[in-house]
Amino acid sequence: MSLDPPRTARAEYREAFWTLAAGAPVVLSVLRLWVESGGELQTTLLLASNVPTLNLVAALFVTGTQTVTMLLIAVLTVGGILNATVRVAAPESRLRTHVPLVAKLAAAAPPWFVIAIFGLALLTWRIFYLPLLVPAAVAVMQRPLWRVHDRLPAAIAFCLAVLTAYGILIAPAVMNAWTGGERLIVLLLVAPPLVAFGIAGPLPVWFARIFSVAGQLAIVVLAVVTFQAALSTPILPMVVTELRAGEGSPEFIRGNVVYADDIYLVVLEEQGGVRYIPTGEIKSTVLCATPEDIPAFGTRVRGFHVEDSLLTALGRQVRPQVRVDPACRIAPPPQNLTG
Image (tube, rainbow, N blue to C red):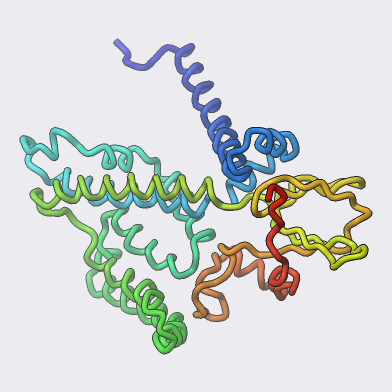
């Protein structure tokens, strides 16, 4: 007797899957609008009525790909290590009879999905995080680097050649980071490829139990942080608008653009509240960076800033970053109209 569900049930499963796949980004986007509006219902409704859903999903993809792929790769990495241990554990051991959930998820992931996740991470992770993909890939494949070839001398020669090329690539950046006091950058650029040589292979069963609990707890914490980051990342452009001066000094309005047409520019002010600005009163509008866009490190790897992703770095080669407009620095916060 076949255990497969009937065709009508399979169709319902597919329909439920695509409903979830299409609805989840929309729900998350609405939650982001709610956070963006400061939790005010009317402001949330205003944003929802003026920001197209497709734009929200695109913004969610651009700003959330790095965090989502980081979470998925963490699941695949921890699951890969645990699966290697489960395969060699005794049949009567608790690890074998109660396989951790994260190990089941990693084992169920199809190869094309794993390759796609690592490809997205390669393009969207910040450059100083990219070396972490090496030990993660080794943990997922569970193949030691010195066994990439059937002949051990050839495998060792290949590993030494790759390490040498990598060392030549990052040596100037490591020296600059060390002299600049950026020890975290040095650690992230140097340590992961070395850790990759010892991350494959099963763990001792007694330690695997501890690792299972600690790893799954860490993934839950990472999921919470990822969800918080996805909700708090700005999705509307930040601008400073200068109004034409009347009798007094010029007024600067800093906030996020909600909607613009020939009559009004609608701005969600930085300190809360919505401002409708007649276009005839606007003298100038400049696009500003948010605090999240301001770099914390100065190190560059072959001309690419370590806090850029490869896509961002290539984009800056096509459209070099413009200087910060003085209006973004001197614009005062909006006045408290209720005071």
